[in-house]
Length: 286
Length: 241
Image (cartoon, rainbow over all chains, first blue to last red; front, side, top):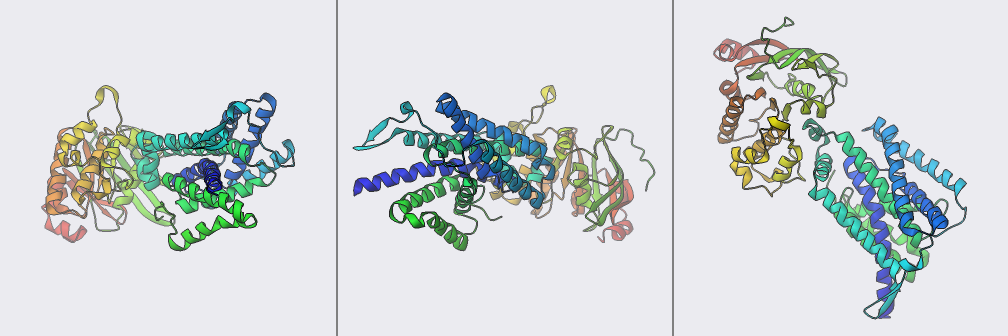
């Protein structure tokens, strides 16, 4: 029984690893730009599918992770430069643009990839059974957690130890004053949006290797990422960490004990947070 | 008030500026010039003083008129470009960043400008020792006077040749106001020009060599500072003080 719990907790952490990579990108972009990228789920899905194709063609999973991440980062850059940047500060056009993009991406995915659910093949050398404290668990899942922790630490360093991060945080507070002090805030926006897209692509490859990629899956993923940032607090990196862990555990235990309600259960913390602390666990009042 | 102004050494020259907020016409012909000096723009509340500052910084784009900075037209430029041309901005209410510590405020905007580099973070800390002791705390947890010092320091490390000071004395104790005045005098000695917007006539009196009066978005009067400030009739007419 105890063993089962430990495994469920580990499953929950694996799930949390994916949720964090997914949610951190969205929360960063939202925190600075005040635009919710409703194409985030589609970015995830396209990244996952591209990764799947790379694995199928080469069998090289690390390459798939890099290709999935960079391709979506590039897509994010093009989208931001040619479209999103033109309607900056106008909520409705911004949101509609991201919705349109997500529809286009999901249709493209339907054309190029299977209409059935697929999962990325993880090579055996990345997935050795690892025995820790008398418990054997797939090594690939530890790898996912490690990647997620690495990403969290990198983001923290960028945000708190570099001038780019200072500009991002100052921009969250008061973008006008930042620009009047000689900082090109539009450039900062582009960088953050590209970073956010990169994270969505990486999350797609990670998630596609653990869960399934299926047509229409982008909306489920978008919902999950929105729940992560609503619970954690929009714009808060620490919030994304904590809420990913909470939601990961709920999903894991829910799947084990009440599978028919597992999707529904994640909305309970969201409802509680919205009722009691609308700015999120670590968010600020807007 | 549309005749050209005599000072040919002017660095900043604003002429016939027209600025709107939505449909409301705020600046309706604002003309002034600033040379190597402190120029004060005075006027009652709601006359467009802050809008003037925002227009110069490019934060509120003027519809017509021109703003020339060292003979370069800047009225169509982005705020960050204007700042990088050597115009420092200390906004009304200071507008520090709650997420950033004192130190981060200074390092965020610090720009090395080659051989002309004068204002380094360490020089700013020398100028404001009280900031040096509180480097790690959030900028918005400082006292009002210290916050104003930080807002000035944050602008100084961009190494500007002019600083736009919007109501620097607002909400400060008399002692802190004196500190602001003293600081501005040091900056003037370092050949930094100042464009000052004030309600507090005492600050303008202490610093300005020239004053402009803004009424309903129009510069209706300008003269040497003393000439205006000693004339109680004019003060009463334009400022009610």
